[in-house]
Amino acid sequence: MRTFTTTITNIYERTIPRIITLILLTAFTLASMVLAVHLTEVQQVKGRIVLVTDKSAETLPQSSARLNITVSPEKPPHSALVEQKYDAYATIGENGEYQIETLRSDSYKNMVLALLKNPDAILKDSKTARGVGANIIGFMMMFLLMEVFANLFAFADDKEQGQLRRITAAPVSFLGYLAAHCVYCLSMFLPEYILLIILKYCGFDIGFTLLQYAGLLAVMGLFGISFALLLNTLINKPDNASMLGRSIIVLTSMLAGSFYLFTKKNILLDLIIKVLPQKQLMNFVEYMERGEAWQHSLSIIYVIALSIVMFAVSCCVLQMKYIKRV
Image 1 (cartoon, rainbow, N blue to C red):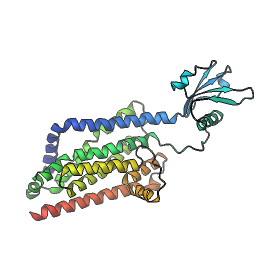
Image 2 (cartoon, helix red, strand yellow):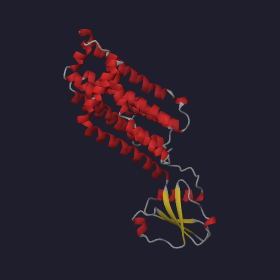
Image 3 (spheres, rainbow, N blue to C red):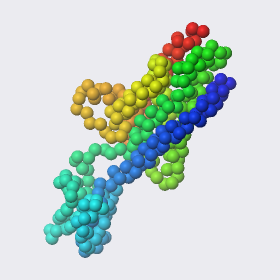
Image 4 (cartoon, one colour):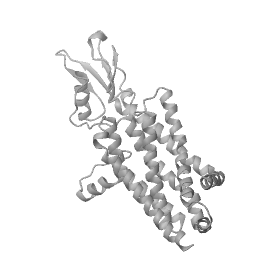
């Protein structure tokens, strides 16, 4: 316990000169979370429609989660469509059929017609949209995993500068030393968690409970720490390990569909994407949104198991490099 306390205190002290970099990384992550909440609200509304008619509003279609309808006796100017103030104008013909005027495609016009006739209509070309919870996790995932490499700076510096050899030679707990680095990395996720608390209590829909987010952040942290620790263990230069790790994180997170659903038509690429831990985590998050998480718990178990394996390999390599040579 003494080793753990001394190490983590030392890491926080060494954080001060790097505080600007960490603040910037955290700011990007927080911004991505706010963007995820905003985009989810925007995606839920398929269009802002002006229904031009003199009829009573009680007999007309009402606004729904997918269509925001404004009833007006006069047709707004065409410039409102150009400025994207509205997406379409709808008028009712003598036969009761809707006529749509829009600058968008015919498929969009058909979608508006279908939603005006039936707000709950199932659109042929629509896919199951992600909820706000999946969007928040997806948008923050890449930034959080990249942040771990910055947060593991103390371990990387100790290894490069030869401090790690002296630490392992001293009568201290090596596991306590590693545990301090892990707890430090997880503690740097607190700003993101605090933002979730603020959003929730400000009335925003964040998709999941705070306890569920805590679990998901812990799993992401475990994976990121294990991966970063493995690369820093195998690669001598911290800069090389960080650059390689962040490049892999960006590429795999994009392929895994953290920001948007990645369409694949290549069998080999599809197979590679399926084994990515980020993809499995996103699958589990989407199952959570549908209330099917525990029926598909293998996805989250896969991520946790892979993280444990990477962490165990890192510990074994470190023991062979340092502890057994003392």
